[in-house]
Length: 139
Image (cartoon, rainbow, N blue to C red):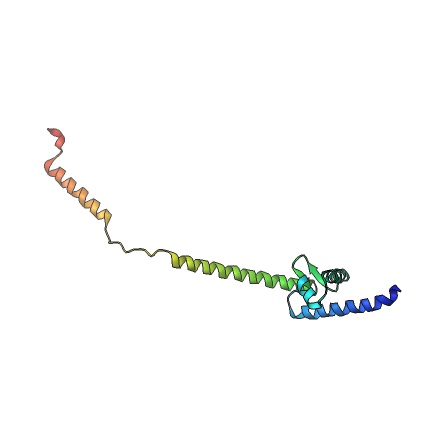
């Protein structure tokens, strides 16, 4: 009796895996929810199907990232994801730097005062006065 049911179940399994693989050929990855919606099955049926497909090697599962055609398909996805994240970080840092430059207070123009020359002039005048009148300590 088990043999009569195994053929239709096996055929259903292969049909579902073929649907998943055809969908994966056009996309980077599929998650559990994507596959469940694609097949329109319950959580239990989807979970058992994906466990069996992973064990037999029909699909490649990598942690929580999702399901892939094979390891090479996952590697291409990971490289592409790293590049996307890198570009996103660069864009965010450029936007942050531009916002900080825009919010930076503008420097106010200051009158030019040559402090060194003023101090030298005052000291020279004091020296000239001392030279003419001498020190007031002799009295």
